[in-house]
View 1 (cartoon, one colour):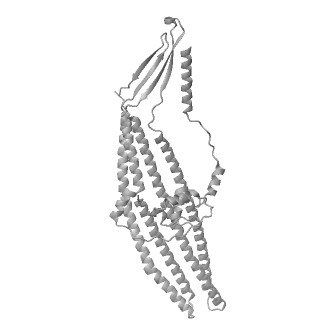
View 2 (cartoon, one colour):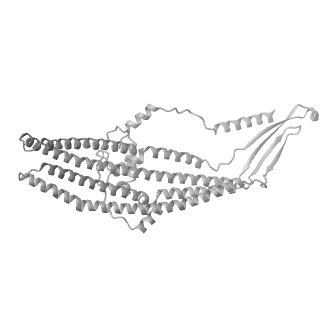
View 3 (cartoon, one colour):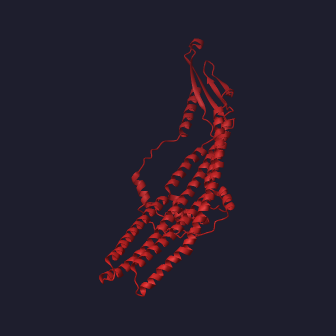
Length: 456
């Protein structure tokens, strides 16, 4: 009786230990209303953004050597910090890393022991009813597969982190492109607004000349038509500005209707480093190349893990029998790798590693070609902008100034004056387009090279 009580107590303790180690389930329903409230509440002044800005203060590429100030209009550099916190794609990507991290933290654990009970009819042999046999089996991982699985899971975590860094860089590049388009739309609006003011002033003179009979009605109508067209273009450009602002807020991860002041930033003009230097920097710093390199390391660890699975693990365990004489036996099991020995797993992992190796090499090849093309586009855009600013714009301004001087002296040629205003506007808009092309080309070139390396 005493032995039976002890065995029962041991069983109860074992069951309690097993249950206490298991996770419990708690439902977590979705709440669309709370999601909307959190979106409404996001602002650039949130504490999480302020903390990130403080950590990045020493990184010129992110901080632009300025202090983050959420009280005034956001600069492009400050907006990048907001995007790193709230961009929707980045938030999802980081949670996906959490899944991989959970896998890495729990990889390489020993398999749970396996237990079983056998009931045998021993009435003919011992005159009793049933005998019970209980056994427990424990797997001893002598093959080294658990360590290999741990290394594989850690490599997958590193690869996912590299992928998030690539996503962060992509989000910053998208924000810069949207910002450049928004800034250019503002510049175009200012040019057209100045033209609208000039046309309005001229129209007042034209109407007086028409009333006095100095100007035919047909010519006077041209000014009214031109004024209507300019106002329509002005309305279109203002709507375009609103569209670009919505795009920027989408990238930032704030509500499209949120009141967020944005500061107009001029395009940073700079000399591009020599191509050989850009090629070297891109191979070293490109987040895309880094992500592909990390993915290759996963395939390396996966192959090593599949190779370790070829070797058997040792299974040991005692067996307790009550068939007349209570006794314990001890068993050892070792699978023999004669036929299978994980051939399929090894072959698949080996082919996957070769695929990732070629993918890494071709990624570098394609990125180098893209870099070369981006540099050509940038140099062409920079030269186009230089010609427009140094040659076309001065000629248009000079022409407009001479016509205004003629008009001041009393020789008003309304059609020539109108044509001069239109040409001056076209020249200024062409310069803005050239600056935008150069800015976009520089953004693309920078995107390929990658962010500046953080100094230790």
